[in-house]
Length: 449
Image 1 (tube, rainbow, N blue to C red):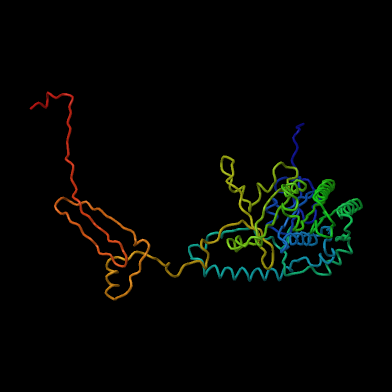
Image 2: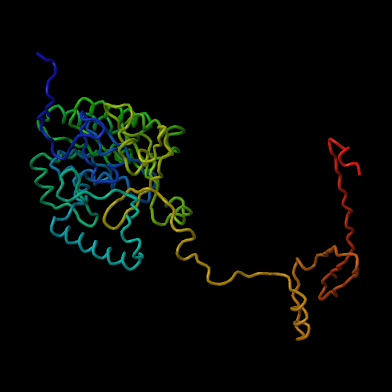
């Protein structure tokens, strides 16, 4: 009997809101709620992994916006969500999260926007370029009917009935932090997560959402407390294969200045994936150079379970590593990434320069020049009794020598006007050298005349 067996697909239970990773079938990924961020991570956030988002700008809340989308995606795809409150009550923070519109209104709006975009494109683009593919700086948004990744809008809030139903069915679990300056809250949060995982009977994936780690509600934290917390959380995720976590750092601990040299690198070692959303508000010059974006995206570490290299290196379209790989196996470099927050959503894009000079930089008036007036212009100004402007270049003495044939030899002198030094032109004869011809032969007797 042959030892070969027919390969059959294993009938495994499909978890809600998940799908296999494109890099390894043994890895299950789930969406963060932002399609472009899923592309940077290699398709999505793998289960048993943690993602840390650092936003050093204290005047914006881009890191918190990522956490709200992460929570909304979990409730939309019927996954369990555990939220740790920060400076405000955890339930109030959940009620402020965004939501998606129903399919009918969303499709109507998308159709109207597409129609207006097509009309605008026909007016602005020449007919010979209409059939060409448009330049894409980001990945397309997922369909609203797909459970893996919904399209959330910042103008829509999560319904109160959805939050109440999630609380009653234990799909949503909140954990508030008691403000206590004498102790830190990281051990209490780890204990709460351990108790939840020990008594949990649901087979649905669990999302742990921790916004504002290191804020005043967490107590007087030091660098060692945050590193221990991230390390302990990562070990708990490894022991529970249906769990993932997303953490956003408080702005004051998201920079090297707080933890000292190598602080961001040490944070990347304690988690599976870490990115920094560096806003342009701290540097106005960058805002003028890149008016289409709100900040840059810096990637420190990427999740790579069951593999040596992150799946993002092969399957990310925004990073551009797979597309730029040459035949020899080398890569020409990684794309620069940026983000922008529109009226409806947060988008990650490849960073590129705008049109050189900008729209309003075109010069409509000639630049002022201070050239040297010629002899005719000087004569015309003197005949009209007008002052002759003097420039710095006209105050220099210039001598020009022109070589002519020996027949004509003369000297011309141009009179000076308005402190202009006279220009002397001297004609000197040119002597032509005599030409000599040399002729040599190996047999001079033939040419002996």
